[in-house]
Image (cartoon, rainbow, N blue to C red; front, side, top):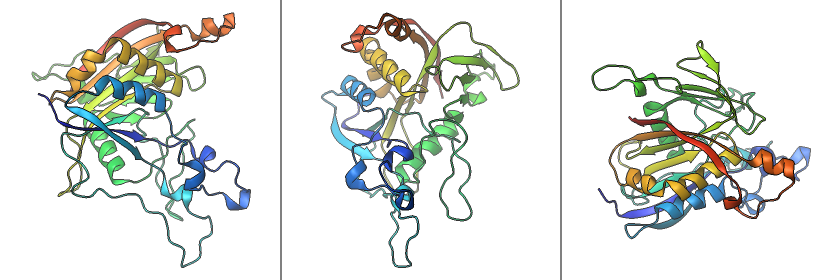
Length: 303
């Protein structure tokens, strides 16, 4: 089925430490004028969007997802207005619009909000993606959590066990249901298995890229929400290389998924020759100078 609509990039901001850089310790809040350009995974988003543009899906622009609390002064007066996350108006989106997200979704990647100030506190995991509380973000995370992910942070991706049960009630192979990634060595997979208690070591050096497609988002009654295509690796380099692979080798598959009405989750394991390039001191001119090797689709799940 073809959809006619707009395609948007749902842009995640840089980490909080980057947004506030250059500010004094007693003045540690970000300014929009200084940080509007500080967005994650823009090159990956470009690759994905160019794969999906067509006569029925045209470019709609960038949707910012900045965390409001990073832009509030630490010690506001009683009259100081607080930044509020953006709301979705009734005419903002069409159900045929598509939002592309090129950053790992922060599902259970943060602890509960502090009871003192309501500001989310970070987990001890590296590179935590800020949760902003924006209405579109809530709809995306709630739907991903409900349909696919139990957990998704920089170290672990845990899929819902229901994804591995077919219509007859039989359970399929769950080898990649729980994956633990190295937080320092280019997101290589360390361990994997069917559950956290029964994980085995990875069979070699590789990482995993994920593509999640949601034809319908869960939101409050009365608002129209777009569809979602989320593609990511577990660090910025893996995210970029995976997007390049999908654009260069699987663009037909991406377009097929986008034109369907079925929720879909792809998992692809791969590695690159970046380590060899680093050892040989060869600086790549472009992504086509980096070899992506041993590519294998390990899961293609209908949810």
